[in-house]
Length: 434
Image (cartoon, rainbow, N blue to C red; front, side, top):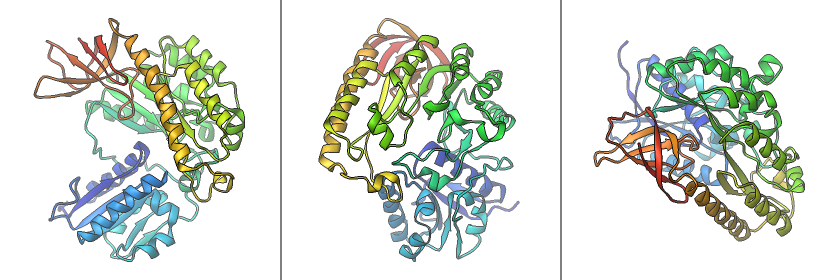
């Protein structure tokens, strides 16, 4: 097939959004197009901008990139969540852009490129993962994400995702396993399972949660060394899943469970499950030896009182999570929380965020210091010319958690998993020797 023009690529948003873009690039390659991750190149005429619209700051970043490409006289193909969220309104606001694709319509990217004016945005998004597209990875490394489902069953009070992505849709186990095998052939050592909610995996296809079964099948792939789970919703985090994580040797003892708050009244206003999270975490820690638990919290949610915030602070102090992400509430239109009153002032939200992060910083430092003189498995990420070896421990996910800087007399390659004796620790990173 004769090569066609080279298409520039700009990516914003989460790993789930990244995979959508990689599927689009896969279609480009299958249809004879080339692509470049340097859209500023003067030879690049057309640029795909895959946007994010999860919170206001993410939208702002996407919009700035759009305006920059318009100023550089690029032809823009606009895709992703920002398009899905604003639809015709965005088309009207950006007369310079002639091509728009919603999140459910990513497989129409070739039509968009080959037509001067092309708008395809489903009013009711219903995402379908195209198994016939060979995904073209643009991230290079020993780890790779696999999207096991799309959409969401829940309607949390602050979240626009169900409106942008539609209802929950799982991929078949055999398709996920096949993709993992293909990634292993490329040298990927760690696969990271993602979805809006990984613990609901299989409910639509198999009529029951099937993440435990999926883990069992992935655990059989010889070339894969680590399997990591992200974005686990607490509701379907059942005993079967806990037991599978405990017994399967390739499933890293790391769990990402965004809890969002601790106070029952705030959780009710968030439309989140109100369960005894302390008891829940204790059960996980009892059954899974040396498990590392990451969570995230939202501060400054509408009506959050000082008492409710202190409840959250005391909860974090008591539970001592290994990793915590803290977000100041972002008010999004067309969500339940948008109309709640009173809305918390920005300075109070930011103050609460800093206070909670300070608490977690001390906990994180204490936990990391506890690993000094201990030996833990780490995956090699990068080898620098100055001899620095960058790795991640089993308790660190890519991009969101810390790193381990190590020294070694051995020859190591990215993807290798080695035992590292920790010699020094900071709040978020550690140092050690093989």
